[in-house]
Image (cartoon, rainbow, N blue to C red; front, side):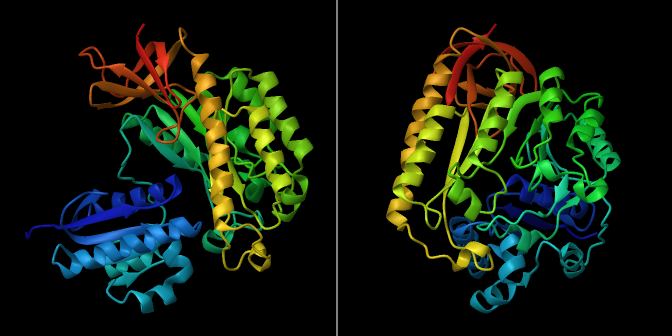
Length: 429
């Protein structure tokens, strides 16, 4: 038997893309390939799983494709295959512009890519090549999106919302738990909409209740929830069930009613404030993460000041900002882009500067307190971990001086001794 070819997948964009890569690798690892993810060095075949969400993400994807087609010219790579969101949307144009790439596939074409690689493909297989540390994994509960946000191209790329059955998700959760996963991070384009396509009702509470009994899973974390029609029963479950992290990632985008209406967010300032109030009244220690969009067409300085004051008064635990970019095919694409790139950048920086101050103040309140921490990795002189209020890569890290008694993937009680804007320094309690 000859030596197996090395196939390396490069994943760009969000955690939903990462799960797609893990499922591709999960099936390929049993075929004719040695597989790796985001590996350095030469490879026989490189698969680039692209992102096409906003301008910066598209630029990064194109730069990565060019980087590996150049590596192919240098003999470091034999073939370059492109898949994912950018390829789904601009396949024909990209083929012409970058003919050096060997093959192009969209998010709907996994069977075609496997046929190209001469490998068997199963549409029902849940096998995954886990790329995260073995103690946490993402669980994608749905695909696509039925929302009609004016600025977003995801429905054009990923299609209609399609929930996975609860039985399938519980079975996958059990498989992951058997492999040592202790934390499940639930993801979709929109967690709030889960179940509406199946039974015309919000089924996220049902899913959480079904996942809670899975042995081995100790934390369940919720990402990407839409504020409109958010099921209030989830708040009650989060308040009463220790396994559900007191954490919610709920991208709000804006707070000004005029902008929200133009964005087609189907919510208002008053409804948003009421939802946040409900969370904080029932779960006083809840960590709320949001994402905002600045520089949307028609956003005046007054509109932005309203958004800035909202951030100041709401004091989100975590916050990210995007600047608006016009995406072909979206409803906002025809609107006049009234805010300059320079001003968009200034507005984003103003929000992040304010958020840094808020983050430091909130972290200072944690000094002297003890938190349960899951250790992710060893790095330099420290072990790095997270509390239930922090998601991997995007939130606070808890840094603990290296010690032989600490092991990655385990939980420890940690007393916080000092803090930075996005770091907590502590010791085993």
